[in-house]
Amino acid sequence: MALGKGAKGDDRTAGIDLLDAAALARLGNLELLAKTVVEGFILGLHRSPYRGFSVEFAEYRPYVPGDDVKRIDWKAYAKTDRHYLKLYEEETNLACHLLVDASASMGYGSGKEGSPQTRTKLEYATRMAACLAFFMMGQRDAAGLAIFDDEVRTFLPAKLRQSHLQRILTELANAEPGGETSLHEPLHRAAEAIRRRGMVVLISDLLGDLAPLAPALQHLRFAGHEVLVFQVLDPHELEFPFDGLTEFTDLETNERIVTSARSARTAYLEGFNRHQDAVKAMMADLGIDHVVFDTSQPLDLALAEWLHRRGRAG
Image 1 (cartoon, rainbow, N blue to C red):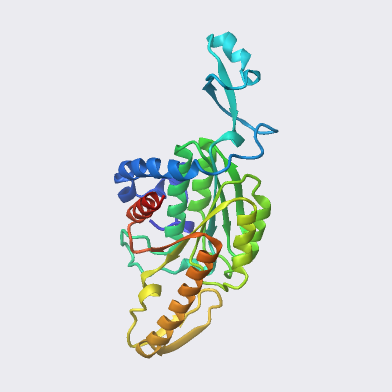
Image 2 (cartoon, rainbow, N blue to C red):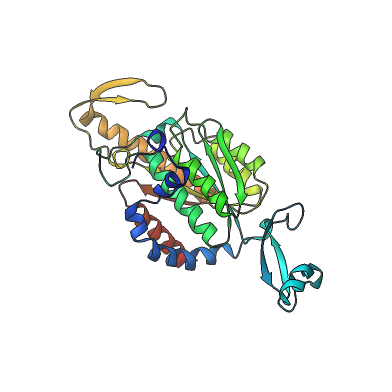
């Protein structure tokens, strides 16, 4: 299913369609895996420092010995004859902030028209973000979203509500490739805008200038967040399978060149591999979990494989 301009109509349907039929068919098994692994790596994170002050009510939970009796809701007790504590949105286990790169380069896709596989990197990224939001909120963790190119185009602070999940899915369904890639400025803006300490998941092809990226990622780390980087790449970018005389178009500048793909292949792969080595070295230095996702992989299986690896590493 094509997103963006093709995703019109009822907002509820647009959001749900992000979780395509193939993924939904295996959603049960993936959710069981996610429940086991996700709970494991979120419990070690610090709880929100903004607890209980000017926050929205989220839910009740039963009183257990050791809880502060001052927090018992006596109105609820009068109605139910049971002791309950009021919980607030800031008291959920984790705030998960999803940062989705929607720059022009994310609009590239080599999949064939009508193929069940996702065709563009942005489509893959938005489905990935939808699944992560779905799982996180299913674990009673708040989720937030930022969509950006060279600036932040959409920002939704982390909340825990079904209606908020619907807003996230709708924004993802409507995301379209935008301007040039500029990772560092939007990441600095996000670090300043995100008020709740938690987990930040950057989903991008990382095909921009790496030099200013490290300070931006450090900004997020210094703010107390765990940072994960999911690099989404098309198989043609990974393998450069072109042959013969081929025209290449830069999606961000519209610059076009015609060249012999066979003669350009060695130079391209050498440059691409140097870039990837630099990405890996940067993430290792920063202590950031970096995973490469090939858009030809079924999304649910790719996420399950990553969750399994992370669970074993933990």
